[in-house]
Image 1 (cartoon, helix red, strand yellow):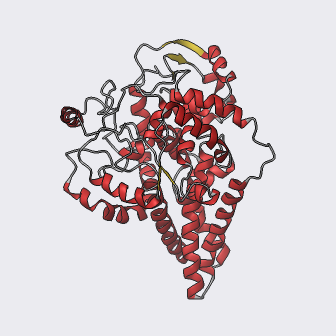
Image 2 (image 1 turned 90 degrees about the horizontal axis):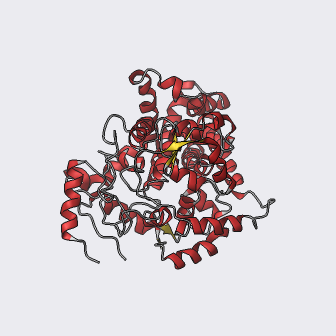
Image 3 (image 1 turned 180 degrees about the horizontal axis):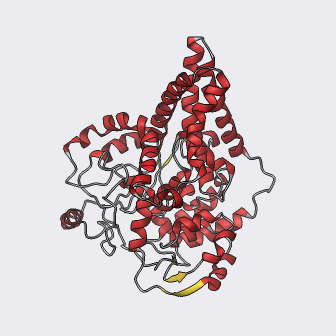
Length: 451
């Protein structure tokens, strides 16, 4: 269906004025979206300004006080600590399967919210997502408790391979061994960071800390990825879109700068340093925000700096040699990670972006998740590829706390519900998504999503 010309003009005007979301005009333009460092702390601050949670926790149209429950939260206290003062409706719905949780809310109810939700998404009992979640809940009862933990084996194998080969780059004197070790350690570092994302969505566990091996922060990633990108993919509330601006612009806008035509080249120049840039952004906040260290920094932020120390101690070389080799490994691993991530599932002309005309301003949350993602035929079906290339992406977005080992078992009931509700589940090739990502970086005109 061709774009509505009148809508295009209105959409571009909204984008220029920055008063509302483009695709969802009933919503406020996100506070602080285009200011400062565009980091997770800033995103949470801006969200708290817009959500009407009154300093507590909001779920649907009610305010709750979970202060006395924070330390007893089965998923770990961090989830509630990070989200205090915000609307956690989408996170609550997608992270919990047990219906008992909904009954527990009554104990912590404070009052009704004063303002409408600043989110376009709905969770009707007879809608796609809630119906699918009930069916998935029944399927999970059939999953054997003693099933093989393939994801854990892959994660551990990548981690230890990275450690061993990183040390070999410093220990060996053979040029070919050093080069092979450098390539393998860089690749396994990137894959370890990708695979550890499977554990970041879950309750507190030791494997989630492997994410920090890349000099990044799993705590930051819980905000930018689990609480922002996963819950509001490709909208103006998606930090994994806004954080790349003004380097890369993935949302369609007429006022994109001239250099968007060099976006892929810019990505290739920026991606190698993205791990380090994220670390420096986080470190700089100590001087910008006085209480940042107390509120957001944790002991695990130094994990990434332990890798060069390990290389130095394990190989017996000088620390300078270990540090230089580590920089090469970190930068190459950073390039691989972001190359995988930017082409994984979300950037393609046929995928929803804020600016596209939607069929309803209040879509079912699960239906929207499928509009904002495309899976890959050459990745799904292989658990190693799924773990290292963000595979089974649609199901993972719908049920992020489930282990990737479990997701393949859900496809029959998932596809059945997609057909019943006419949900837009699509699959394509990795190459098509790669080309699509380049097209989205230069796309200026918004479009009407296909029926």
